[in-house]
Length: 221
Image (cartoon, rainbow, N blue to C red; front, side, top):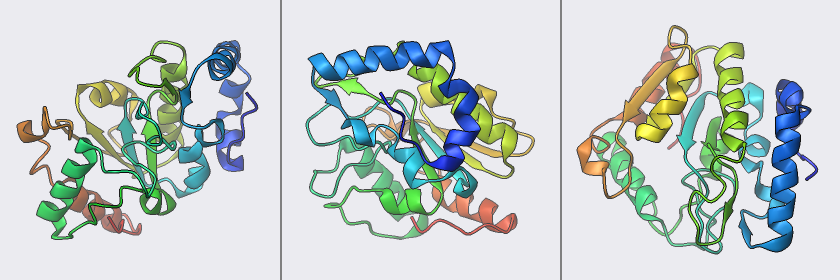
């Protein structure tokens, strides 16, 4: 797997990309793509990085692993391509945006590339998945890679907002330096948990207030 990743990220992650653990991961992933149906398409694995260069990152949203149904995953957490029906969690994210910012989102369009282009790193913890088998690539090495990504953002940047929805994302957040970044936590937007604290979290308005306070552009959610 030739890693085609945006130059600023390649520089930041260079040490890890040449590490034995990452080489072992790429060997596994190559084999999976050869023998099974894996999502997203290989060229979209690093879409989050290629759409949001390191120097542009002002917000990080951490997901778990890609959507596992055909056509959904395109390398940005919670996002789906234009022609795909909104998944339940994204519907709830849109509901909270409406409640928080009084912005009505188009429920026929779940592509969040516009967020990524504004500096929102839409990062899944695991970047690949086998068709119809959620979490099938968990524990294969992606988690360590994305820990390195989060650590790099935490160490090298200031005043980034990290949105951690659900216990899985909160655990990933333990490595963030909270003395120089804003970390907002709540329940996950999944229908199983959204009513337990995701709805009403006002994370979108809080994010923009923090960014503006630190002379950064607010996100057009």
